[in-house]
Length: 481
Image 1: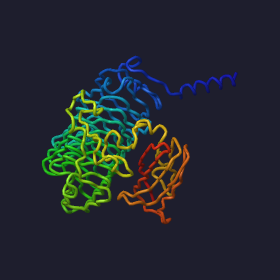
Image 2: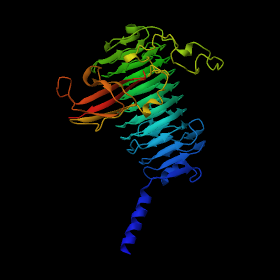
Image 3: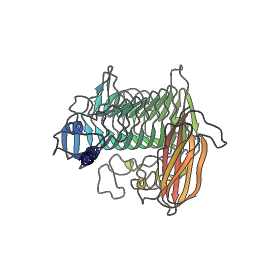
Image 4: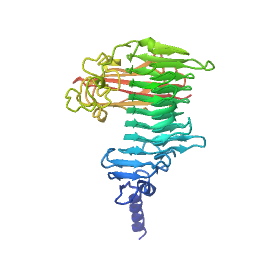
């Protein structure tokens, strides 16, 4: 009897620990009710509809996913706080996938409203993907941060395939990143507004994001930085960035860099921003700023960058030619035009653009549709399933870390470590490799075998397959001492 009893207990425990699927509204009428009932690893699937509520992940590492996609599944915050809160140290297994997030008014942090649509805070690291974040606000007079999204206080979320549009805040109309280091891939920030500065995105206060394929277009700010404001000891890394048609009154139409900040910009385009493309600005009491630019197209070149306080590392491959956007070539919304697959707010490149194939390692400049491939088959969406540079482990690390990558076919692999100034530190791989999973252990040393100081480093992988397919990816590595 005792043995039988123990076996039954074991079976019950196993059942209790297994993840389950919770359906909304079939099992619970609201998304929050389903979250309240869920435990770690559960998946909540939400049917199409308009859900008027504010949701809080409440520290649970669960998946909240729409069944029909963002166009048909809307979470409406009813102007009564942030529409979505992820503020209790949730990790990458807290996933929000496939919604429109709208009508949020921000979370009050004791001084101002922050995170109108989504607030990620207090060391949380969720995965946000396939979202439209629109018509949210975070406004407290001239203050308030992150009309669409606010990411703060040590948080490291991953954002993938996100549209941020028509949001308003004091700082960072679209997105505010404050003392945080998120990863952004395939993000569009369009037609947001800041009452003070950073119409599209604010990156400030010791923030070190890594950003690939970011479009920042048609945003505005009342005073400074219509597109991007980089502020206060921040070191963002931009790969394939398009900044176009942003405007502000006082300077930094495309980007302002201030207070000892040092952005690193590769394979990017700055065009049609008013009153200027980039401004390095300070009041004199801070260390000077620097900006490093390579393989990029900057309107007016050096003349498009104001050197108020700082310097430009103008590296190889930069041009000053008209990028020839699709946007400027056919009527918006004219679906009878068969030359281009998409027409609305399209800043992809025309055939014959000087930016095609002239970015770093032969990629296209800018965040256009094909910016990471030299061929269109397979598409970038399919490549990561078989081709991937994984995040190193552990990270942060001291003194060594493992770097893994997977390739789908035999081909040429180059794996290089850079510092945040774009200087090459060490080459970990260069040569032909067979398909499959590969692992390299890095001892945090430069090419000569010298130990490196603590800080942020970048690991960049380039792959050219035997069939001619091309793949590029970058990961951020944090070395501690």
